[in-house]
Length: 107
Image 1 (tube, rainbow, N blue to C red):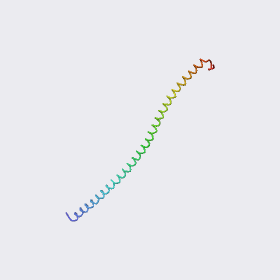
Image 2: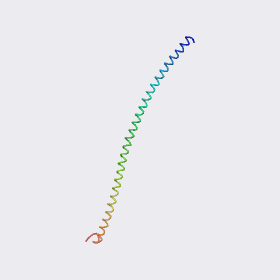
Image 3: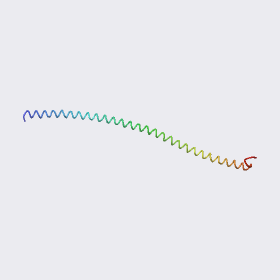
Image 4: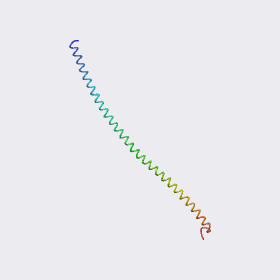
């Protein structure tokens, strides 16, 4: 092999080595950029998850309030039913007393 051919091969090898170093640098830069972007996406997804958690916490709180209100209304309905039966019984007693004393409750 002649010196010109050898120097051309060595020159090509030097350029190839330089290109490989540039490719390695570019890959490192790409890796850093990709990791930074993934970190941004992770932060964004965490923020969305936190927003959903807060919203669901509010929803759960409102559901508990609704359930409590429903239970309160059910309890009031039971009390009202009991009171209605007592009023009906009292009306019957008053009618019975009115019937004993004469018309219209006059003695």
